[in-house]
Structure formats: structure tokens, C-alpha cells
Amino acid sequence: MNTPIVWTIAGADSSGCSGIAADLKTFQRFNVHGCAVVTAVTAQHFHELSHIDYLTPLTIQEQIHILQKEASPKAIKIGMLGSFDLSSFLENYKNPVILDPLLQASSGKPLFASDETSHINNLRKLFPFIYLLTPNIPEAQALTNHAITSYQDIEIAAKKLINLGVKNVLIKGGHWDSAFSQDYWTNGREHCWFANPRDTKDVRGTGCTLSSAITALLAQDHDLLEAITLAKTYVNQAIRESTKPWLHHTHAALQQKDLPYAALKPFSIEPFVCKDCGPTPLGLYPIVPDSEWLARLLPLGITTIQLRIKNKDLMFIEKEIQKSITLANQYHARLFINDYWELAIRHKAYGVHLGQEDLTTASISAIQHAGLRLGISTHNYYELARAHAVRPSYIAFGAIFATQTKILATAPQGIEKLAQWQKMLNYPVVAIGGINQENIAEVLKTHVKSIALISAITAAADPIAMTTRLLDKYFDAHQLENI
Ligand code: TZP
Ligand code: MG
Image 1 (cartoon, helix red, strand yellow):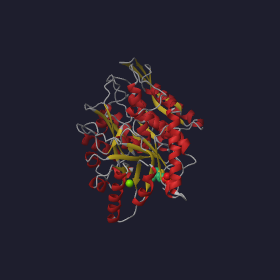
Image 2 (tube, protein in one colour):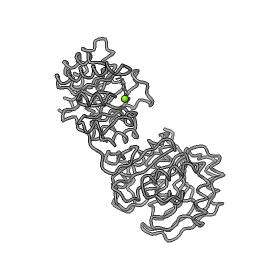
Image 3 (tube, protein in one colour):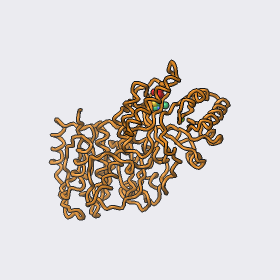
Image 4 (spheres, protein in one colour):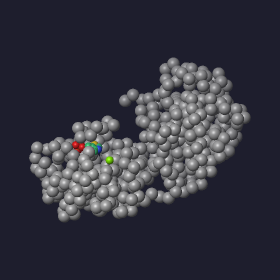
């Protein structure tokens, strides 16, 4: 694999907790090669900074100049800059630049050479070249001249920073006094809150690590929201596993407990947890377009099924939902209604299945409070964080393989990633997309307990024989697992 090169332009921290040291450890963890342009040397132990020596513009310029000759970066992270003027270099640089606009060390010492106003003006000059700015709340206040005392103030400050020229801003609320540590992202058109229960541990280097993890992930062509989600999960894990003043940089697999909740609104309390689907795994999970299919499949021993009707009039849909609920009840099967959550509530279906686009339009709390189960489709970690914020009854993940049934926005996920998600998540995972009689055994080897299928059943020459065969394969795999 081609290892991307990334740069950090930042200060050296003798304690090894933050600055270049944190950035290089993070780059290593995310499998990118990190080059370091040192702007300053700081004398620090874990809790105190005693001295800063800002390197001369010539020394900084020469590091950049020689690196440009054979280590051109796929992304750049900028931390402590002193008073060095990077604008003429950034003007000609086209890949993503992440600026972590440091103003103070954790110990409170200023991290700039000039007075604060000229330092802020120097940073602002760079804004038009910045893909992502990652200030904490005091930095966002100083950069915008806007006091922040509420979530709304954070949104206003972010907007101001966008108007000052940065393409994206992530304001880190980690230093705020609330039950959740919440970061706010916006590009001026869309926005998202990333929330985690606050960890009060006093560890250093979290900000540097977050911005360098995002940098590494962008260099690997992840989109920004995916990069933020993964970087936050990593930092949460590194904080949680730390027993020292420094972060525990680790290659350990990501865990659900470190995943942020991602939502359009900030959190004040833990999200409501959806009703679960009971102790019996969801199993083979056909997705069908009408009630006749339920009549055909339920007698075969199918215990979970989804009614997914697209492009039909509402009268037809409501009738089909009613018929399907009656059938499902008759066979004690778990019926999920795709999209039509209001009808599902009205007619007391077992559950609702929603896609990501529905998360903003459906009333999730109405579904939850009516006691219906809720399944959510996901295709990446950001979507997983969005789904996690509504604590669903299951997570559908796909498409595992190429499929003709749906035009996919993303490449097939593959078996390996499915296995990772199955390990990482406490939610029941439903594998979907391109699964059929040839590959179902391979999918079941990941230990997923539910397989959703459309065309393998609905486009089969003999759907009943096919469903029976797929059920046999499902139970064979589970018996093997239970031996
Ligand atoms: N979501 C992800 S892939 C997919 C959906 C609805 C289609 C699955 O259909 P098939 O025919 O089982 O590949
Ligand atoms: Mg939908």
C-alpha cells in the first residue's frame, strides 16, 4: 500500500505529551508517514512549561524548502507557529490544511511570540487557505471576539470563523462545564454536534492528537465527517486507557464505548435507548415489497422480515402495512416497516427501519416512545455515530458486496470490515447488500447473527426453495458456532 506523507508544522514539547511528539505518534498509529517542521523548542515537563525558543524564519523556511523537494504532503497539520508567516507557502499548496490555533499551553503559558492581537491577525491571514480549523472554546472566543457562554454562542462563533475564510470549523467543547464533552462542526451549510460523556481525566495532548488524527485520515482519502468521527473515537479511547499525564496511543481495535454520538442538536442528557429485539437473534431477514411475500415466506420459519415499499400511493401502503402486521402477528414474526414510521406507529408494528436521510425527518422520539424497535442503515463510521445517537435496536451495515438492488454511494464494505463492526458493536448487526446462497456462509463466519436479503430471495427462480436453502445454511453455520 502507498503510505501517504503528511507534515506537522508545530513546536517540540520536551515532555513528549503534545506538539510534534503527539503528532508523530498519532501519524504512526494511522499508518501515514509524518514529517515534522519544528517552529519552536519548548522546555516542559508534564505540568509546566518554563521556556520557549522560537526558531528563526530561516530555520523554519529551510525545513519546508527541503521537504518540498521529495516529501510533498497529502495533508498538513499546523500547530504552534510562533510568528512565522506561512501564507505565501499555503497560497500554493492545494491539499487539506488543518490549523489547530493554539494560544495557551495547558499550564496557561501563551504559545506565541508576539502580542496576542498580532498573533491572532497572523492566524487570521491564513484562514483562506485552511480546510479545517480546530479551536477550543477560549481560542474560538479570541479568534472571533465573541464571548461563548451557550451552545448557541458556539454556533455563532463557528459561523464567524467560516465568514473569516476557513472551509470547515470544529469547535472543541472539551473544556466546558457540562455532562457531555461536545464538539461542533460546520462548513457554513451543514453542521453536526459530536458528543461524549465527559471524562474528567487530566491528560495532555488531546487537541494535538485529534487534529493530527484528522490530518492522517484525510491523507488516506476519508471524507471529513468520517475523519472527525474516527479521530474522536481514537482520542476518547486514548484518554480512557491513559493512566498517566500523557495519552495512551494504541493500536487496539476501536470500541463502541468510545464512539461519539453525532446529532444536529447538542446533548444535555443521555439519549433514550430503543426497545431491544429480544434474546433470539434476528436471523435471516428478508426485505420484501408487499404483504403477499410475507404470506409466502413466514410459513417457512422466517422470524424477522421488512416491508419496504417504494413509489406507491399511501392508500396502498397503509393497507399493505395492516395486512403485513396481521400476518406477522399470526406467525410471531418481527416485522419492520421501512420509511413509513407514522403508519407503523398507528398500526402497532413491531419496528421501523430508517435510512440516514430519514433521521432528520422522522420523529425518532415518537417511534421510541410508542415502544417500536428501530433499525438504522449505516455505511460508514460517521453514519454509525449518527445512528448511535438514537441508540437503535439494531444497526444495518452494508453493502457488504456489490448489489444491483440499490445504487450505492460507497464501495462495497467487504467481509473484513463487517467482522470489525461485529466485534466493535454491542448492537445487533444486520449485514446487507449482495448476500446470496454462494456467499452467506462466508458472511456468517464473521459471527453476525442477522443477514438481510432482497434479490437473493425476491429475484430467485423459486423463492420458496431458495429461502429454505438459505435458512438451512444459516442454521448450519449457527450450529457450528455453538458446538
Ligand atoms: N441497503 C444497502 S444494500 C441494499 C440496501 C437496501 C440492497 C440490498 O439488496 P440485495 O439485493 O440483497 O443486494
Ligand atoms: Mg428510507
